[in-house]
Length: 231
Image (tube, rainbow, N blue to C red; front, top):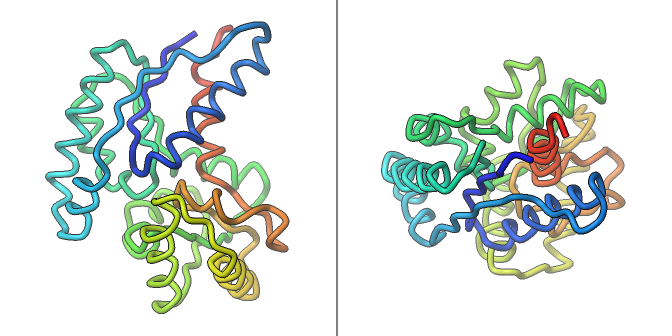
């Protein structure tokens, strides 16, 4: 079994989900007392968020790159950045390591195409929805991306940072995500990408008429598949 390196803490709420999903899948596949081989570096999210809000992506890339290098030294055979937004600095992180980085956008694109989906709504932080680093991964795979309007983007971003990242799950925020998803479905979205690792804590498959692609679930499953190659 390969050792999975998790670069987490962004937020720690969703990192818990990664750890649980990966270990549950390994137990299901191998049985007995098996669990995943994992090394985890959990960063201080406040430091990373300050880099985001100030636009200092170079600093955040250096922080995560150094952390990833530590995971490699600790024995990780490949590494996951346990957040969508910080894949903006995926290239910087990869430059610090010699082991592969399992990119959440590429994993998500494969899952969409496997279901025959070529037009999808993207929900996430404002960085993920508005900037090109994530959308380009999907577009290069032939997937058209729809995003909410500016007001809805601001509100989803607020819910993520002010509520989900601190463990608040509020019914009115679920209703907001549902309404935004339905609006994009009416524009032709065949599915909705939960492009922030915390959204799955709030929005459930039964909440929408289009399928939800939870990037946390997809990323964790892909990690297990790679860890167990040849098992």
